[in-house]
Image (tube, rainbow, N blue to C red; front, side):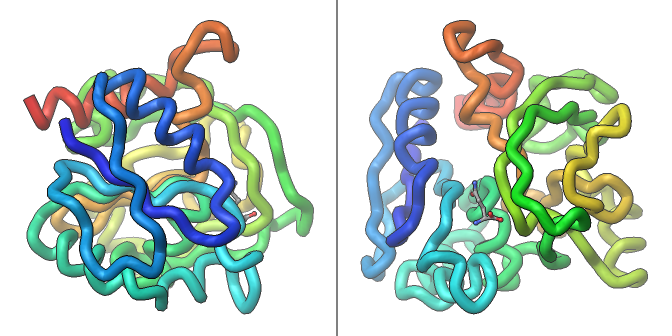
Length: 222
Ligand SMILES: NC(=O)CC[C@H](N)C(=O)O
């Protein structure tokens, strides 16, 4: 599976993502700087976590207007799979590739802790290696992770099965509506999620629960 990771000034989980992708796919991902205007041929493009442009204006707002995003929107429209994690999720909502918005955490504090996720839809390219209803551990680290969508949007994403992951067992760290932790676009080829599956892929780091997300994508590419 060929992958690419977009890097912005202020990205800080890009290296974690490179490591996870290389370990799981066996191939080194391409690194694409935000000023580029084209993307290499890839089955999966990742927008990693961090503090792109220092989170100025609104988290993800400036990155969503960077040159590479035009190309990413084009690729997403062509059906290329796109995964945005944490700041990546914020960038994808700001770019209009995903519904809803990420607001300041309800507790107004940066939250860095492990939470539990339930895979509520395992019929997606990003979640097919999980069981439906499977609860798994995942680290989080953000201050703007409070997912919100207006009533009409919320109904449509819930009805269409676009909600893939929910915070489980009372571990919602940010006040997200309906405990939403990860959503896809209507077509299902773009996923955004606040927690960091790339940080739980090796026993050495405390577990491998996040691996199944990447293995889901690998199974699709095979
Ligand atoms: N780990 C991250 O990607 C942080 C995301 C974002 N800048 C926030 O704090 O909300």
